[in-house]
Image (cartoon, rainbow, N blue to C red; front, side, top):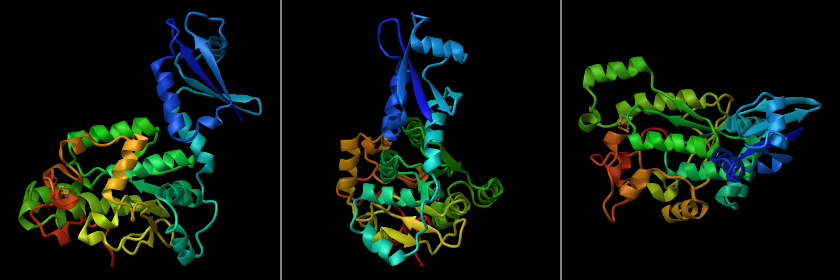
Length: 331
Ligand code: SF4
């Protein structure tokens, strides 16, 4: 397959901003090397090679991509769609995970980017990266740099901060990846609110609301996957000290018999995650600049004070050993 990217040069000699953005996104995702040729369309020169290609294929937008397989060219005008197509052929599991204990000991020797690559090489789009916090975007960044296809999903509880929704959209555009949103069952939410109001978690704990708004949608989401990946770290909470780099999920089921769970950041500290985010210029939720560390739903998250543990701002009215929403329970 021969791939041409047609970029537009404006009359003032500069590249069009959308073309620059598309190139950055493709580089971020490790896909840039797959483009064989870049052709420029000079907006004030209809005879420039790119303008002639635009006329030939009746395209009025820039950038666009021509994918030519055996003399049958196809044109894509969406950089996001192009990135998705480019990732797809590599998206299947290349080998089954047979020797689990050997895999676990091998992974414990690897760095988080190497673990992400290892997992995607084997599971591809059979693996979903669970996205909500800063750690998860670090994983998305590592996945994008691996060059392998990957999928991202998110649980929209309906109670997230407006900043978080804006952040989700930013990540979608930055990495050119679809963020698959999973919503709670409408009738279950209606019944909960009808019976107990909108803030019952302050009275009788968060488990019921999290069960409806998070756990049930997660169960549904994971049924599509053979593996999932989370940003859990051992030092995050008293409930996470035993997190392994790779686990057989004992709580949820996937599409096959086993559901594997990868936690590539298990051995990293909060400081290591943030130094990676700063060094790699990974996008992060603007709430982090206002004292929020671990961010969940708006009514159940507060900014932390200096010296407080990072999970102190989650369900702060409950015991620290109870501060899990049911997504990461181990039996
Ligand atoms: S974090 Fe709070 S609002 Fe969100 S699902 Fe759990 S209890 Fe409900």
